[in-house]
Length: 600
Image (cartoon, rainbow, N blue to C red; front, side, top):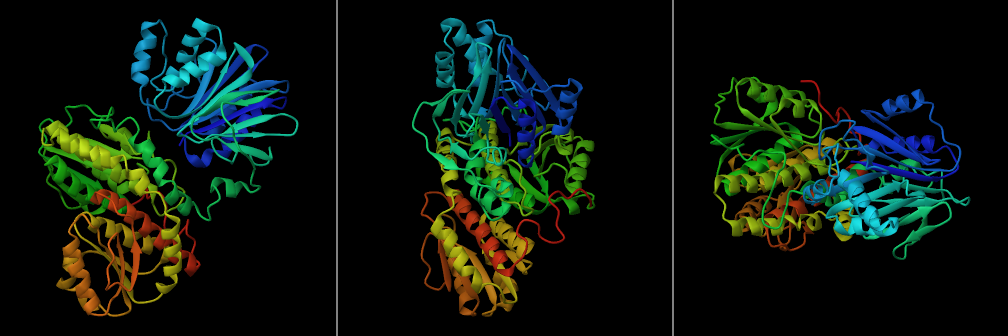
């Protein structure tokens, strides 16, 4: 995800900004840039790719700032517009620059308004409207504070902003709404800004983590907030900062699912419709089938989608394992939309399957987390999941964002085909808006998983069972446990247990049963009773109590099976992680595995 840094002081501003951006590299980015205001002049440097490319540009210009100056910097993860230097931050007006994290949902409306007022835009981004809007208001009032407040009052979406302007040469204007921002200060009056702790540790001791709605103005002599803030001491370990205080990156990524899912939905979930600016409304013209192709966790997300697409879109949908698809001599017809899913966009088998579909003349779509990856360059269309960088090898937020994108896509396709009534879409949108709450980790549930984990360190295997789209969730739960604990686990359709696997049932066979209230509860209950009668150890996950369970993890009651899906997803992730911790394995870097599988 994008990163922000800023600085006010007498030290080398250029070096401080670049060093700060380097501390944010772990977040992932495709371009970087800085803007420095000193002596009535703004110097700007932008580069694609790694920060080392930005450094080379700066060094060629011998840029060093030891007198008083202010500066802002940014690492960009593309959302609006491709990774280009024009689309890289900071973005300029006539005399001001801005950096921004998040998404401005009403940018098109604002851009049209500003173009009519004579403003010229040079990028494809939503961010550029901020700096033009500020200058529009400043030109009318000649009051920078009023212009900034008028600007942020017009913005809709999630954002954190730093803005500098020649009209106020010693000030940085800032705002936080839905995207992280921290401000740190030193005893000698220097002020630092960043979107996480990492750039601040070692340079300052005190920090304030801005709450939503907090804005203000920083200068060498003052730091003014629009409301009361709380200062805290900064942590001392940079590794701690990158993990935001969590023990493992996987744990951090489980907890931040509730936040990244907001980014996934921003600009796409409107009050009465699902929209994808990335797609042409003709994408389903002549299409009678959707074929999905993926590997690993992405395969499980795709399998979930087949249930949703057929249920909501009323379009025939199927799923293929990419490593098998490549060699089965598949029949590919041009009435098929070919959808590939990959966190990295570089998964070798999936990429080759995509190329096969392209060669056969099929329309192609990639759902991916990395813009400008190989798959995004090959496919006809791309939908980015916006999950941010995922450092834990075992995917967590990649899966949840993929499922949400595919759910939204099911509604979008259903509307395009005329197979979904508006009231059904409206109801699904209301449920979608509740997903972040369902992904929020309940401290009591986490503690329950931690306590129970000590009972599940032995035995001859695990069966994760579920029905309908809780079957792919069972597959994903089993995969998580296998990946990091090295214990044998299988995901199974609950109704299939009696067709062979139930022969394994005994007290040393652990059954993890997914029992949603709103989808086939009585059926799954009957399947679990069959296993309990044969002495399998049962761990039930459900909002409804189940007397036959040896262990029970209760999820919050909800009004829809998809909210139950995400509630149970978090439990499965935590459960696997806590078992792994007790076994003493490396949670973030399990043996034999790589984050991006770029070979067959």
